[in-house]
Length: 327
Image (tube, rainbow, N blue to C red; front, side, top):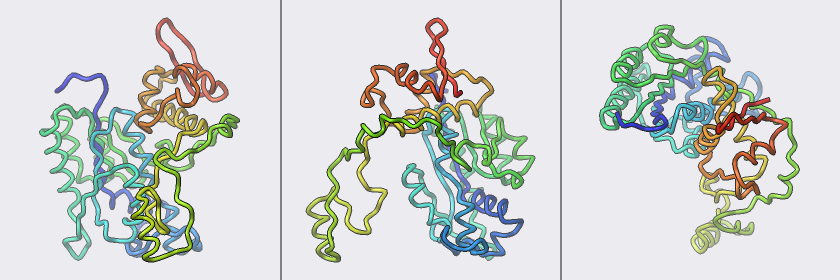
């Protein structure tokens, strides 16, 4: 295996498994099948007994899963397996596209709506391990006992196997087969996000500017006129355009602070050591958002950036080592 300073991680998500498990966890055993939830799109505006509202309440945070996986190294592969034609799965389009997840389409092949995700996922994992010998970590996002043999084989091939599943909906045997297993419920950001206690006044001074181009002025024209305007200005987003394709914006101080806190939460969730090396923290921030840099925010160094957040984090120097932890 290639010698390297940090891990290279491959994430494989049995999407139906994790979504159904989360739904049944919140709404009771068999609720997914009973409600025929796969044919419904989430909508949080419905009543508590409305299936669309129940789907919205049980939404899986794909970003939280990938962020946690990134605490083990660079995510080199992220792949999700499901029937993406059904409304319940199609509703995750923005989450998946924003995180550049590779989607594998699996149509049901039986009346019981089995799509063979476990077989396809397992074949892909083993193929990737032989094709990419520098992969160090395999993340299996599922709770099905069908993945026990896969976890065992990955360990025999010298890879660290991390499992992620829903509490109360995961096979104990699968947990035992992994090197480490984390319940989805305990992953930072999977449920309630951390509320920052610091109001960063600098955020008012840092304008959120468009990097690529100025946004096009709103137009009342529709149909052909809107299409012509979009063709004339490719950077403009026409009415009803895809929000995923909108230009990126300049990072604000508050956004940078959230990244710092999230990186520390993820690293501390990985082990019991509270103090983290500042270089490791910056690497984790870069994995969460490759556009991060302290200099455009007005700081000469990452150490200076950390010190400016002393109400949220503690900083200390031990010899040549710079350490940081959450307060």
